[in-house]
Image (tube, rainbow, N blue to C red; front, side, top):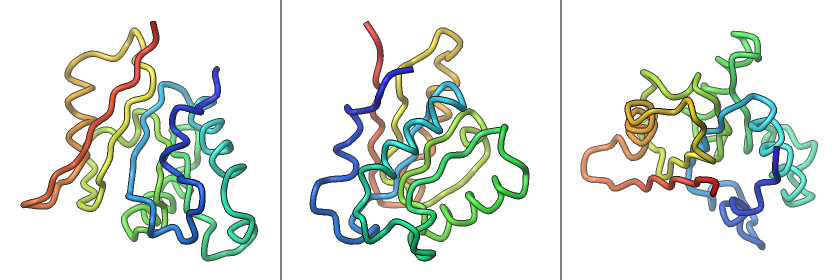
Length: 141
């Protein structure tokens, strides 16, 4: 695993409130990588967000390792806009419709990821009529 410094622009310095962060899904290839990325963002979060119930879902991870109840809770928070950046594995890539997602990021394309999966993931962005979304693909050399 590596750090995710290249993603830190998603939480700009000086962010005061979570609504300043466009709703984003970051797809990662493993649960440990998703957890690490989420933990890194919490480490960079404003101090006033830490331990406050209202902010507890700003950054969430979602993978099959989580219980069904926890995944449902995370998805509910994301749909409600409480979760601003969702660090997810394949579990969030299929058949989920979140109309307010502005950005979808694929972090480091793995050998198992095919063009169909990439297209499915990029289709998570901007599902409202008349809006535009952004898909960003990071790859390793």
